[in-house]
Length: 462
Image (cartoon, rainbow, N blue to C red; front, side, top):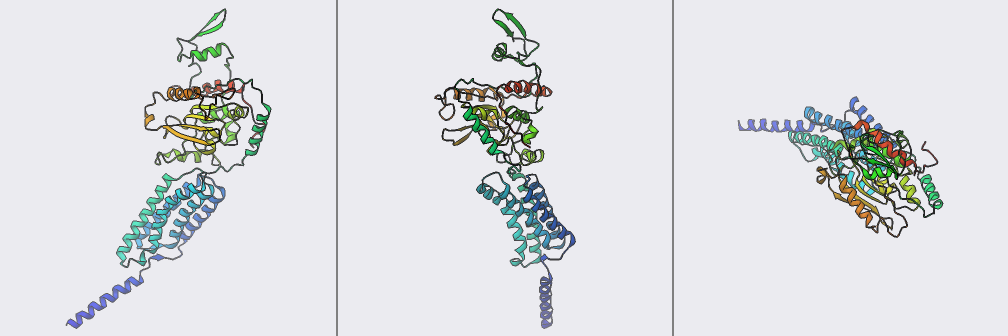
């Protein structure tokens, strides 16, 4: 009897062993759907690498997520992994890594380590799924391991979406040579020391008649010395601006280049339609370090063509022209024309910047101080964080007053007192949501006044 039981037990062990040997962990069957999906992912990667458009990586990441979901579902249903779907996942994840190495706007080293961190976990998890049968012999344990890993493959691919740095090099032809030649000609042409100071005051979303100089509520009083504005009844009392208007030229028939902030600022600085610089809408933050879960860094790639994240470095701004003519230049307040590299105010003709790259309803809304020293080195520091700016009661007065004080003290790294003349081109920005439809009129006043000082590039961008 014991001998018979031993034979049965021996036979049972042999059956389990045979069953384990028949189990296939990596299914190499050429399923049409898997092969077609792999071909689609591979073709998409090639298109993404060749074109360089920064809205394509998000689509590639979605393809990786779909592949991960299909792998996870197959593990649950059939306890194995489809080889070609696994390859499709790896193609998408590794393709993203290669794309940002080729097209990333940051330095190669930063692109390398940043994206390496993002792809590390998806690749390790996918590799673990592939080789797990080498060290896990039990079918149930193998299934659980692959299910958990494939689920995490989906999760880490989703994390990649939110932390993806979409800053990429513009795909447009650079006109930097013409930009440099023109500014060199300005430098050689204007050598006189008889240069006026230039002050530009720009306010967003201000109604036409808000300030007292244009207000129908203000009174014009004539006297022997000229016309004086009585501004006490105006919506916004601006006596200093009124005095400039009383002794100068007031314009009351004008056009705006755009009804929103970034394009109108582009046109004010360049004298060109914003569409010529691919900048026909509001520029959003591209920085993901302050709040990676904020959706704003996805917006620029889908509203601007050719990877443009602000005003391109080869645009000729009136600040660059003044700078080339010997002026010291500064910008105070809101910039909203880009937040890195060539888009920064210090790369657009301003020696000094104090304010925010963003709008006060964006995340982040912090203040920075940027300047270029006499050796041409760029310096930047955050002077007020987004959290500190949650109270925006002094968002206009504080940066303006602080920066003006620094300029008055003639800081050696920017406003050098030894220069014969100092120009502070200050942009004071205020946001008023009460009359947004009047924003265009407010910008028009500034646009035409700038035309008196603007120098336009001889060649237009094609």
